[in-house]
Structures are given as structure tokens and as C-alpha cells.
Image (cartoon, rainbow, N blue to C red; front, side, top):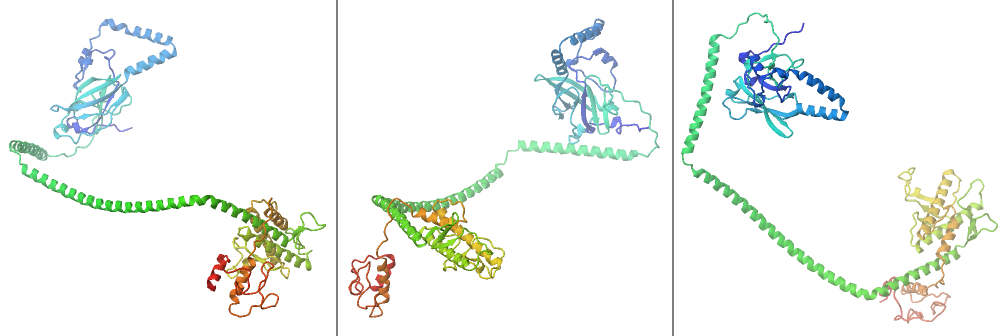
Length: 580
């Protein structure tokens, strides 16, 4: 059997400080059905003093209203006949008539302002307000057991005062729970520290609890406690009276403006010191800005002077611009023509032509056939290996020469040495090389090594591959696209053909190259009185461009031009200064 719930507070001990929350059940805006005001007055219990508001003053019902049950039945039958939309609207209207927004306020006797105002609960007919704490109020309020409850509602945006009840906490009835309870219209439930109480519902009868009698406080202890409480209240009242007397004395006494004036003076001095510091900082900032402005003005003057000078230089150069552009265009045409001539000469020097009666795309260089990056060590022996090395040496020499005339550095530098040419790879990451062989191991031979080891043949084939990559880089610099980089001689032939092609005539070689050589020879011959000639005669100087004349350099060495006619270049300027 479950233990019966009992209140912990005796009725005479219930105070306002024990109140924690309030609930309102069955919100009603009209008079209760089947109940009159006079019946409520007759059957009212002594549990709470109920004071009806203005809206609760209804007329007493007569016997003529006994036929309202039939009218209700007729309205129910008519509601069933309407369609679903109208039924929904009527149901929503019925719900709206029973719900509202609301809040309450608590009042005590002797207090003009409410001691507590609750929050607003929206659209409800059963209000569960938040808990509150009244223990921090004045002791005269927390020790009382009577309060006034006022409830306000809002419907359609209009706030109205609905209910007012005077409640005595000592006369409330203890109820166990809110479940399975039939509350009257606008029923109130008060939540105290030990449970819930109601003024409209009588609690269940409880049997007296059988327990042994325990000793309680003696009469003397209770009297001491009451005396102590009275002393505390007297002390509080005395404190309030003394505070009131002090306030009256201060109000009657003329105010002393000295301390206030002193405080204002100190504050003014503080502000003055602060403004003086700000003024000093502003003066410093002003000085810095003046210096900065002067420096900027000087820089602007220098910049304007430089700008004017640049404008004058530009104006002077405007007249030379057209001639400089023509000179640049002429120089480019001459460079292009000289490249055509040089590539034509290289094509004649390194003669690349198809192999007679050979397979397609089989070419030879200087009469030595070179396959297209195909070498089989099992079938190629003896003189074929030397011929292959010599052909690769010619191809390497041609490739190395083209990089200077086409102004395109090779990604893999070539060292020409006849049929013992090598090529270097400084780009690839070769992980199999140790620190000792890092420099020497990046040199790859363009010739077949002796011994026929697999590693040596691999290095030879890799060198050939690097040579083909260099040829591809030269072709890319001339915007040529090759189909297969393994065709070494066909790609070189294609490159030379494109670089030497043109509609204009190939320019001739410039004269004067031998003169520079003889200028260098004259410097060396200054130490000896006799100069050996080409044909063995010491009294004659060698001819320049097919012409010969006795004498030295200028008037002494017998060159066919005088010193005044000599045009100095950058190479010969130092030599001429040495002569002087």
C-alpha cells in the first residue's frame, strides 16, 4: 500500500514566503452553467474568501431557463448539417472564445504596488505560470498569510480585468496532484513548498498519523525566540526612524557646497592636465607633419625636375625614334639574313642528304650514315661502331653550333671532340649516383664505349636521347613542330632548311675579318723587329682580300689602309689604346 501524502506545513504556519507558484484552470468569460451567484453564496465554503468582480455579477437563473438542454441539442444537430469548412470555422471560433492571453498580479494589504507580476501566457485556457520566489521581500510581507489575486486577459488585442480573489493561505485545502481533478470555472491552485493547495476543491480525508510523541520546544525557549524576534523588529524600526531623522536634518540644513566645489576643482584640474598632454602631443604631431610635408615638397621638386628632364629626353628622342625603329628593323633583317647565310654555310659544311638506295628517312652526314636512334649491339660490329660515333660527333658539332647562331641555349650542354663527343645532363634527378661520382656521372658519351657492357650501352643510348632533345629545343625556338624526336638527321635537315629559307638573296660575308686578326698579330710582332710573312718573305705583309702592299701596320707594317681610316670596334679599341 502506497504511503499517503501529507502536507508538511500546518495551516497556521503557511506564510506568503512559502508560495512558489499559481495555476489557473478552466478559464471562463461568462457565468458558470447550472450555477447562480446566490447558489454560490449559499454553498460557499469557508476555505477562502471569494470576492466576485464586476464581470462575475450575473442574474439568478429562473425556472424558464430549464429548456436550454433542448436548444443545445437542436444546435448540435444543425452543426452536423453544415459542411466541413463552416464546421471548422465554427470550431475555431469556439476555441478562440475559450482561450486568451493572460497574466496575474499579487497584492498585499498596505502596499500600493503589486508585490509580483507574472509573465504573459499566450492563447491558453489552463495557465501554468512560472515559479517565483518571494523570500527577498520585506518581512512584513513574507510573514502574512493573506493576499489578493488579480487576473487580466487579452482578447482581440484588448486587455481587460477579469478576476479578483482574496485568498487566505491558512484556509486552503491540500490536494495531492492536478490529475483527475474537476476544477470549477476559473479555479485557482496554489503551489507551496510542501505541495499544492486549492480553495475550491476539498482534499481527501486523512486519518491521523500514528506516531510516538516526541518532545518539542519548551515554553521558555519559545518565549526567548519571540522576544528575540521582537527585538529584531524593534531594531529595524529604530534604524528606519533614525534614517528618517537624518534625512529630515539633511533636508533642513543648508547644503555645504565646499566639498562639491573642491571635487569639481580637482576634476577640472585633471581635465586641464589631460588637455595639456593632448596639446603637447598635438604640437609634436604638428612638427612631425611639417617636417614630413617639407620632405615631401623637396621630393616633389626633385621628382618634377626629373620628370621635366625625362620629358626633354623623350622630346629629344622623339626625333630619333623613327630612325631608331628603322635601324632596329634593318638590324633584324640583317640578323635574319646573316642567320640564313650561316645556316646555309652549315648545311654545306655538314652535308646531310639521303642515303642512296636506303630505306625511307635514312640520311647521312658528311657521307657517314646515321640511323634514327636505332642501334643493335649484336648486329653492329667493327667499323660500323666507329662510323656511328663519327656521325654522332658531326651531329653534335652541328647542334652545338646552331645554339649560338639561333640564340637558344641547349638544355643539355654538348662537348664536341670529334667522334668522342659527350653530352651532360644537369636537370634530371639521378638517384643511382653517389656523391663521389655526381659530376663525372652526369657526362654521357655520344660514342660506343669499348667492352660492350650493358650499362655502357645504356649510357650511350641515353646520350643519343639527350641529343635528340636538344634538337627538339632548337626546333621549338623556331616554332617548328617535329613528329618524332628519334629522327636525328631528318630533324636537323628540316631545321637547316627552314632557317636558310627566304625569298631575298643570301647576304655576302662581311669583309674585314682578316684585318682584326692582323691587328692582333701586329701587337705580338711589336716585340720583334722582323715579321714573318705568309709566303716566307719578311719584307712584305700578307695581303688582305687578295691585295698586298709593302710596309708595316698603317705606314710601318704595309696594311692597305691608314690609321686614320681605321674603324675601331669593341674588340680592337683596347688594342688601339695599347698602341698609343
